[in-house]
Image 1 (cartoon, rainbow, N blue to C red):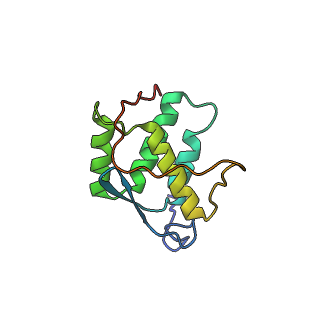
Image 2 (cartoon, rainbow, N blue to C red; image 1 turned 135 degrees about the vertical axis):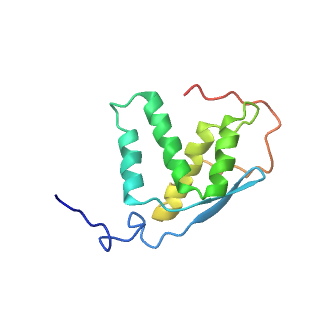
Image 3 (tube, rainbow, N blue to C red; image 1 turned 90 degrees about the horizontal axis):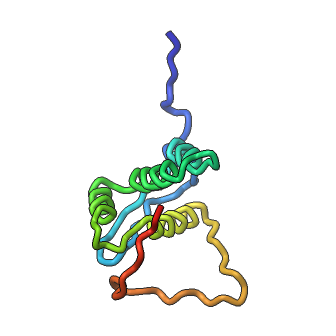
Length: 134
């Protein structure tokens, strides 16, 4: 029988050298995300393949993001996504993920010339927001 050994092959977070967990807030909830492993990144890239169904893509992104969070914040993340009245949705998850990847990789996305950065918001939005159809 063939055997494969993973111990000592690579560091746990080899995708982003020296990356540290990042704590961030969504409204009043604090989340901690840990840098993805090579395996997590491979699954994420597979979920984004052009031959995947939209539902597979969404599920892959949600699973990837969920896997980056610690146990307590996974619970909050899932509760908020399942709450019909909470404007926390897939679009916000994608924004957060892009920000985390930029932070870990040390390659922030540059704003187009001539545009001004958005003003940071505080608290929940006071207007209704249409849910993503994805």
